[in-house]
Structure formats: structure tokens, C-alpha cells
Image 1 (cartoon, one colour):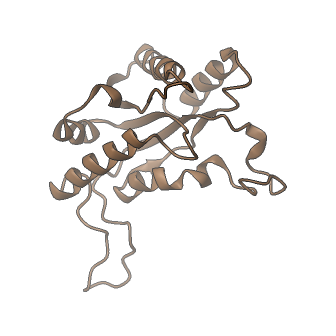
Image 2 (image 1 turned 120 degrees about the vertical axis):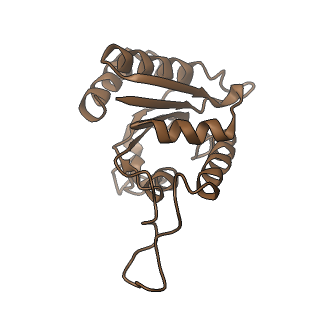
Length: 196
């Protein structure tokens, strides 16, 4: 198995040094390598070559993004990365050919023009939001939505390219709870269930 890990860690002065996401990306890498995966790692904050990132996506069987959640989305450096890499993958006709629809066959659906079938994508997140804020219609902000519902804007990029979306993983309440030993064990179990 070949895995690409995209670390979207972005330090924010006075709020986050990015160490937790760096650590989780390292845990993922070590766990996969110990189980026979070949692993490539992109640290977005350290820069990247757009065409090389397209090729990494084509090389990988599994793609995992490790990201903090800032203001209910990925950091802006991740959005920039996606815009640049996915646009190049479209223009080069390597990741996606078109949106899937054709004038000759109106039954073809939007989003079915991806060229990356057989690959899988997993999103791993760190949140200040507690786990209880999700999957409960009584909760004010997310009103019953799951993390996967809420992050469809992220996973849709990969689904549009033909990639199978795996259930996401989240560390919750990271600013208040402290101590992440339990989260590390949950992450390893999640990888064992969905990736290994």
C-alpha cells in the first residue's frame, strides 16, 4: 500500500503552535510504515511543488489529510493547496477529466468524471468543539450534523475525482481537555479499521 499524508498544520500566533497536528501526522506515518505502507508526507507550511503533488496523488492508494479546524474549516494554506493541486490535476487531465456529464448521455451525473477510482481518502481533524456537539439535533451549532456531514466541502473534492471517502477521525476539545493518549489509541484503531 502507498499512502500520501498531507499535513495541513498551520501555526497561529497566540493560539496554536501546530504541534498537535504535526505529532498526529507523525503517528499516522509511523503506524502505517510499521504495517508495511510506503509513505510520502507533504508538510504544506514548508512549501510544495504543484506538479509533484499531482503525481503524489496519482501514486498513492490512500490519501490522508491531517488538519486543524480553524473557524469551522481547514486552514487557508490547505485551501490554497487544494485549489492549486486539483486545478493542475484537472488541466493536466490526470485527476479528473470533466464533471462527468455529457450532452450525448443526460443520465450521467455531475461529479462522475473522476480518474482516481480505486483510491481512498481519510480526513483526520483536531477540534476545539467537543464530540457532544455533533450527531445531536438538540445541539445549537451543528444541529445534528456529523463531522463527516460538516466536512463534505473537503471530501467532495476527492469524491469528484473518483476517490472513495473513508470515515473521518477527530480529536475533540483539544484546547480544554489536554492529555491525548486516548486519542492516539483511537487514531491507531481507526487506521487499523479503515486503512490497514
